[in-house]
Length: 147
Image (cartoon, helix red, strand yellow):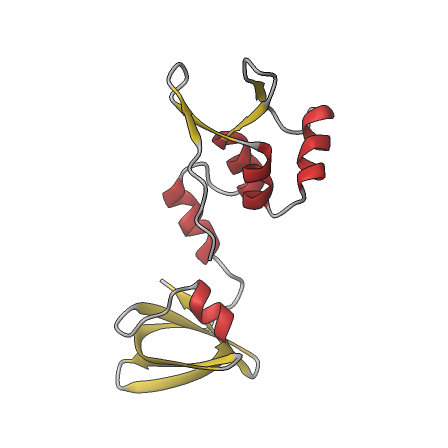
């Protein structure tokens, strides 16, 4: 996995600034899209002494989280809100990754729930034994949320 680039820091405003290519990676859009947004003033940028664009981290957050919370703790709360009512919170007993799938076993009280999810999802959530997680039961499927 590629190392995440460290944003530049401007002392005057005490805010992090990213190069357009770094911003494109964070927003998961193409570099030309970022350039067009800059030219059309859809995203705020500043120019360096050399004429290069730098994008404030606050602009990335604005586009990344749009109507979500303004602070990191608020965003965490928003991402956990889902429409499903059948959420069971418990501890992860085991995570077994094999090929494209992962088997996640949750212990909820004296009950056990097993869910099959994609291996990439298990890795992305960094699911480990002993962590708190929620099983979201919807119809015949059980989804895992890291809590």
